[in-house]
Structure formats: C-alpha cells, structure tokens
Length: 631
Image 1 (cartoon, rainbow, N blue to C red):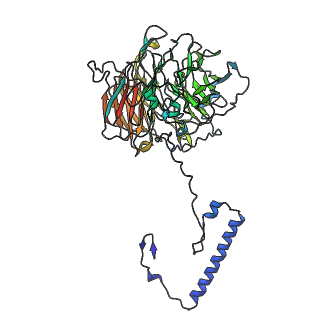
Image 2 (tube, rainbow, N blue to C red):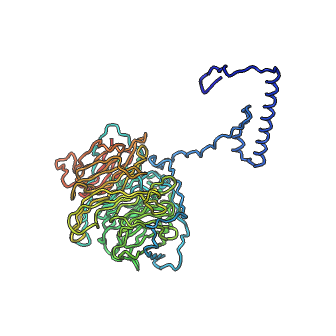
Image 3 (tube, helix red, strand yellow):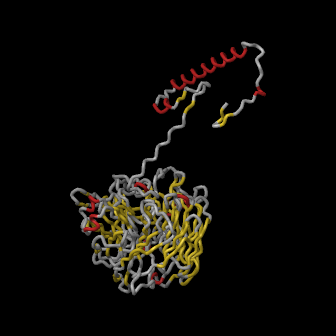
C-alpha cells in the first residue's frame, strides 16, 4: 500500500477470513452494482442540470474506479505578464476598484448634516439641474496609469502611492552624490517683500523614458535625442522655469521652458506618453494671468492656459494651482483642484499625431464648488492633490475637510472634518475590496499665537463610507509635535504631517509609514513612524535631529525587501531599512562638490525626491538639483 511517497505495510490484525467461500464474491458484486447505480445517478444529475461548459466537463475525472467523481478546482485567471512600461513595484495590480454606492455613509461624514450646497459650472456658465459626465471617469489600479515607463505626477499615479520606479538592489549600503545642477534662480513674490528661490514643497521631479519615435520630433539636444535609452528628469522651480536633465549624469537635455510665474507644487506629465506637461502657478507674480499652463514637449510651446478668475470663486483673487493634477487617459480628462475653491475637470479634446510630430487640444472646462454651513468662503480652496479610485476623487481642503467627490456627477459622497489643517495628499490602498484613505494633519489651529505643542492626527478612513471606526476598518492615532503661530501667516512655522505617508509593499505590505515634523521642539526633530495597517498601532519609529517637510520615499529590491529615503531641512539624506526602522546610512549633500567653494551651508531640502532604478533626484531651496546614486 502506498501513502504519498511512502510505502506502508498493511496491518493484517483487522483481516478476518469469510465463513462462506462465495460471500466475498457476492458482496463485491452488490457493491459494484450499487456504485454503478450511484455513478449513473450522478452523471444523470450532471446532464439534467446542463453543466455543459467545456471547462466543467473537462474537470470530470471518471478514471477513479472507486465510483466517485472528482471535480477539479477552477483554474485561477492567470496574471498577465508585466508590460515594459509598468512599474514592477506595483505589478501585478490587484486592486479590483469596485464602488459600492449602497453602503451607508458614516453619520459623522454625512455632507447633508452640515447643510452642503453644491454648484457646477460648464465653460463659465452655471449648470441648471443635475450634472452627469458624458464620458464617465473610472480609473483602475495605478499599475495601469502610464503607457510608457516613468513617474508622471506627485507620488506617481492616481492612488498617490509610489514615488519610485523599478527595483533598486542595495549592494553596499551607500549614498553617493553623482551630479548637481546649480542654475535655478529666484523670482520676486507678488507681495514684493521676499524672493521665491530654488525648489520647495512639494516640488517633486518627474521622469519619462521617451521612445525614439517621440524624441525624433522633440527639441532635445542631439545627444539626448539619439541615445538608445533616455530617462529625462523634469523639474519645475520657483524662478518660473521648467528644467530638463538626463537622470544618469545631470546633463541638460534641452533648454528650459520659461513659464514666467513661480511654480511650487509638482507638475504632471501626460501618462499616455503624449509629449505634454501640465504646470500650476503658485503666486500671482507672472503678469496678467494667474492659473494653470499646458505645454507641448515637442517644441516647448504653450498649448493652453486657464486663468482661474471665475465668477463665484470663493477666493477670486487667488487662483493658485499648487496641487498636482491627474489625467484620465481613457476619457482624455484633466482633473485639477484649485485654491480659488473650484475643483476643475477639463475635457481636453487632445489631438496627438506621433508620426507627424504634432499635438493640440481644445479643452472644455467644468468646475465644481461646495459650501458647508459651518465653513467660511474666504478660507475655501484646495492645496493638496487629488487621489482617484474609480469615479471617486479624494482631497483635503483648506478648512480641514477630507472629501470624497463623485467625479461623474459632481456630488459630494461624504466629508469628514479632520482634527487640524492638512495639505497632505490622500493616499489610497485597497484592502479586502475596500479603498482606505490614509491622511495626516499639521499642528496649526489648536490654540493661539506663539510657540505651542499639539497633536498631529493621522487617520485610516473607509473610502466608501467615510468611517474611521473599527467596524468600518478604520482608525485614528496621533503624535505630539511643535508649531509656531505668528501674528500673520507669514511668520508661521508649523509642525506635524507635511510629507505624504508611505503605503507599504513587498515585505512591508502590512505597514503604513508617516513622517512627523518638529517632534523635539520648534524647528527641531523629525520622526518616521510605522503603523500596522489593520490596527493602527506602532511597529517601529526612526528619530531624526532635524525636521523635514520632504516626503519619505519607499523603494524595493527584486526580493521585495523595503527601504526608505527621507531628506531633511539641512540637506541630509537618510536611508533606512523599512522592515525594522534602522538606519543604513546617511549623507550630507554639498553644493559645488569637489570644487574649491564646496559647502553644505545653506543646503535645505523641502521638496520631495523620486528614485528611479537606483538614482535619487531631489531639488533644494538653495537652487541646486542633486542626483544621488543609491547603492
């Protein structure tokens, strides 16, 4: 007798000889007959139930002479092979992205309970009645966001969950400063009492691996145009220009585009691989226009400009687009909140001819605004970027509201008042078929003027109901941080959450990691804290002496081991083992490295970095952009 791969001797102690020599034979005949009848009945049931699909019939195994029918388990749907343009960190993209609008909204997040009023505008004309989008937006898992390799927007995609691309294999645990561009200048602010300089929050670089056929029509220099693979880094700055570099060596790939107005936030590239960049103005220091700009990356020409001076805007004198937009390629739609109080979508009507090297667009603008009974219109507006799951858009406004908006009907699904102000972009993570939103707050509005200590709140929110209770799968936690509230906002220096949280992947897929600024005192201390996604309890923490507004970035090797980079306000870059929170190494970045005037004085990193297959790129307030090899 055989059991598995082992042969077992039969146990003869249970064997008894038959009293009648024919008894065993007759019994065997009866058993076989009964089994035959059972088998016939089962097959008849199968037939009369019309189980006739190829897959089912193929799984019926009648070779088992015991009389039983063996039904094999259904073959799972195979995971498609990874496409060259897909980020392996996000592959295979398992988010189902299903909106269940039948779920009851949490009582603490019901917009109607706060007396919400909502208005839709189409091409600067107010819409009567209900609005329904002609081309419904429904954005899937972010592994499908781009059509060429690259990092296209702040935190990478519509879930805002990844600012790194490709694997980075750590072979010696080192960070090496490889290149520097130091030519970013300054621009006088509209108040005319200070100068914007360098690159600041959020200021994240973008990366695109342009195909040769696209590069053939671009105004690149000859080296960039003809090399086999070009990974072009694009960074927008406060001097009003957009800069272009080769990620490997920092060499300029083309001349800058002069927007003429300061850019503080992160622009976006068209994820379809179209040579288009979308840039938002942060200050009214660019002349007569104040809004957003769309440029062709074929020749640097302006394709479109929208001035946000719309009738009914809550802040009609402040049309800043500091947030980083999302482009839904399937419907050719640009999604972009503004600080004037409107959430805009643009039906772009893009016409891109790759063979001819031409691109144009003729956008149709739709704007949405809302108001609650307990809010003041002069404080409305959005500085955080919007995250998109299906047709739901998630953002935080300037009055502490975390909002879920149906982008196809422009109806507020739910809204939750956070414990303080927040400019952090919501991050989406689907868990057990439900989108959860991770968000954190600053310490800003908790008491009067002067230096103070307060709580930076963090939340896990059910993205369908707005609930944070255990029943909804959510939670709330906090960390003490310091802040200074001046007599005017110009003197404020806030602590708390400014960097975006990390959604763990690979070997830290059970973690979410937040960065807290000014944990030791005013302008002192920073803390990375890893929390269990399910429970909201601390798993580890990493303490820094210097505060940071820069977002931490997670990256991974081919085995799924996780690492974190975080930059601080004196130009230090820390590399941390994300599985236990222990530091691997750190470096002090330097201007004019290796030259006679080399210095680390005045180097401050407030912007967020990216990591692209082992190369880190980040801008500084002092006007330098650094390329750092992660080894």
